[in-house]
Amino acid sequence: MNRAGQMVLFVFGAGQHLDQLRAGCDQLADLIASNVFGHPGSSPLYSRAQMILSIGDLVVDITIVPEGPLRVDDDNPARIRIGGGGQAANFCAWTASMGEPARLITRVGDDDSGHRLVGELRGVGVEVRPVYAPEPTGVIAVLVDPGGKRTMATQRGASTGLRADDLRDEWFAEVRLIHVPAYSLFVEPLASAAMAAIELVRREGGVLSIDLSSPAGLKEYGGARMAGELKRLRPDLLFATEPEALALGVLVEDLEGLAKVPVIKLGSAGCSVLGDVIPAQRKKGIDSTGAGDAFAAAFCVFYLKGAPHIEAARKAVEMASQAAAQMGARP
Image (tube, rainbow, N blue to C red; front, side):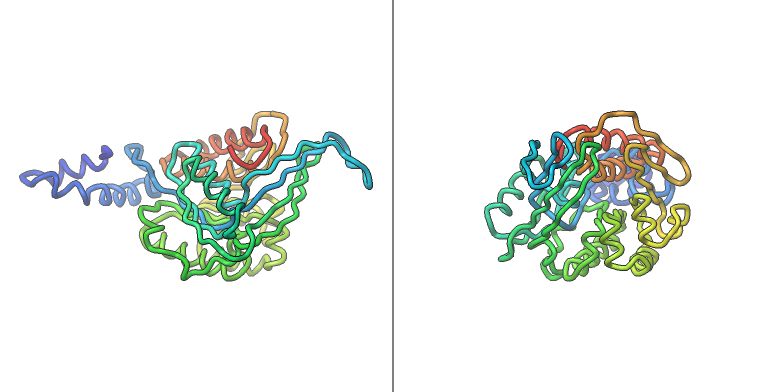
């Protein structure tokens, strides 16, 4: 039991059997922390592990890093890596790498790739709640240029077919934060499933985190439309790059009107949170494919632990730099 819970027992437990109070005191301690310190788990006394959930893509990543400039109609020596990908899955993998409970709700093909990807994530400590589908598992081909910038070709496959009625109540047990990539909001029926998941988590007092994911995806969906959804949802955390904010049709400084804590990812320059800029250490980037997901995972973990936004941002920048210094999207 955490120390906040012990305090509740001390105040309310005199003359009663402690076992009768222990089951409910953790929930009351969470309520006290939420009201006194500003967000769930933000008390410095709060040390209990907190389940973090994401919903969305689990796909095959094919990462290609050419050794030099590409030559058209000719051979190009390159490092090629095949592994797991998908923004929601990557976020969970990085969360689990920090020793935190992570759970992924996803839909994959009932094929060798789908079963292998689920097994790999479970192997690194992620609780995976898969829905197996007749469509093939999705695939993303990532071409990384010499400067570390990426071009992606995407076939999302089975992942976009997740439906609200696929969700089970037990998948949301003890979830303290749900992280939703905008990829999970762009297309139906996955978007309705994501909205249903958000409602289930928030009903129990959980935190909502959204990552804007892709400028191209936002433009196709409609920037003003997504801005309207964000205004309605009012997420606790919103992760965006400057191009993603522009795709919304919103100035970076105006993102505070859409979320309680907007976090601007500045790539190799670090990030900006509520007007504070947190620089990144200069390191040579190899592959930035999973850096944004690593960043969001670290920020969410430390936000839930009660870290001030600047400290959460420092931890996030450190994790993103670590991710960009390796090949592939996962730890």
